[in-house]
Length: 123
Image (cartoon, rainbow, N blue to C red; front, side, top):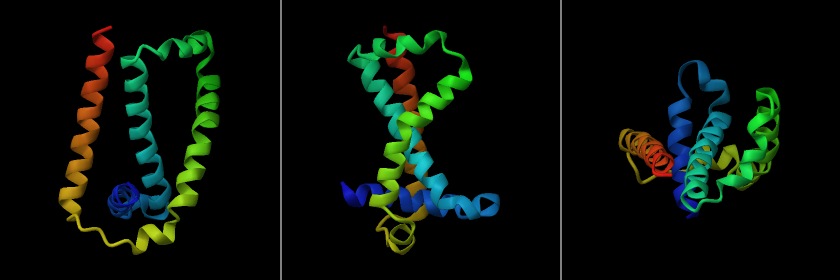
């Protein structure tokens, strides 16, 4: 599992290490991974019918929702940052070709989003 996340972070780091995101490539890779993990977590909550715990936030203003979300996601961000430091990700040699890896990642994101929509519609 450790190599799996290293590979994903390495592929995302290579993707973001171009153009205007070159200076923040590592942080963009961490945030991209967290967004996908969050999408999968929300899909699981809806599938298991445990999403009712979030109805409390339904009438909270949007700015407060962003603040609450950032507080909830921050520990995971710092955990990933500590577990997979930038130096490790830069030096990691993936067995996966970059083009294949980035294509597989974005295909996974699209499939995850489709599954999320299907699960929400089936409720």
